[in-house]
Image 1 (spheres, rainbow, N blue to C red):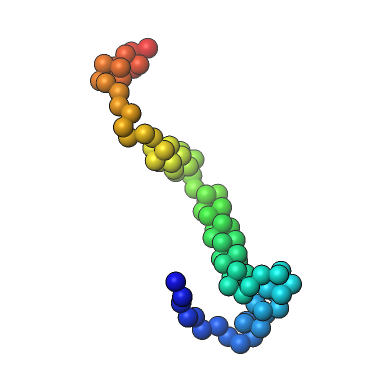
Image 2 (cartoon, rainbow, N blue to C red):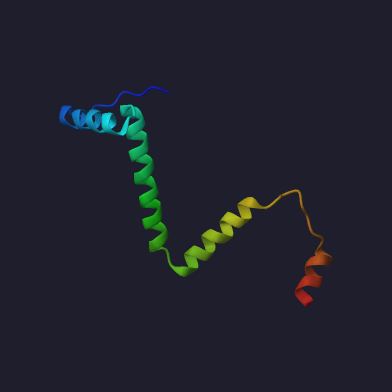
Length: 83
């Protein structure tokens, strides 16, 4: 998908110089920079979560990995709870 964006001439010149040093295209350099920025922001966000929010997020991630076709009967659940 192609999108046109307006970039200041000085910023574009800097991007071209950095991309030459990094042996990347300007597009590749911008993608790499954006990916890095997103990762930093995600880490900052995770650090700012409370312990309870971290547990909730962990539970959500585990729930997304579960096999929805794997079912357990009510009796099995009750047996586990009684232990």
